[in-house]
Length: 314
Image (cartoon, rainbow, N blue to C red; front, side):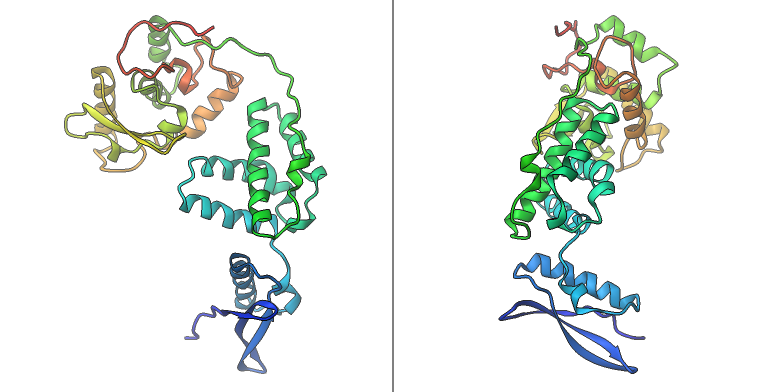
């Protein structure tokens, strides 16, 4: 069985070069490929691209090896690096890039992306009817990506710096927290998904958990013996917080755990992310006293885990 081709990075006066074994007339020959970069992470990506092409029996042109990264290639590396450093917003940034930016500019070389390309992406987000905050988040994700490329000396300037956030005209709805009576009616409504109702219960009474906190919750983070304590991973700060569980939450989670077969680990509501997102879209992405299925509609934003009267936030 032929040994897997990996190639070697070698520094020379011209910068990084790849030394890769290729097959010429049926014989293995070691060949030099200039990578045209002094940046080692970029050289690693180019080497991986070159090796993959050779493994697929495609002709290896030296110009292919020295070509710069596409936006999609650099974004994959950028995302992996941010995940390695446990950046709290890395997952959301990657999701915004995959959903909105990469379909438009993913195949382009980094230096070929212009401010007009970025403006077009943001205009498309606005056309989808998404909120002003979402537009800001998409722009911020693209900005950080190109800022990293600029710091790596792969581009001369950040094209996003010239693009302002477009204004979204939307109806601003009153933000309130459901009263106890309203929350009980919402929780007992058979029209609402059981998993979403359970998450709403936890969000209301367990330390004001955000939707992103709930999505990161795992059975291993709960006391599965007495169900009187839990650990919360705060998505915004990356901090862990130990909290007690009130009886209402404890009983509901114990029943859900037994129904799921008493797992030791894994998400306690495996499909809730898609359902909650659809629910937020149905209610216009706002937290109102509408009885909607959005997870955070009953969240006590002042962060108490003790039940009691909830005052609308005007």
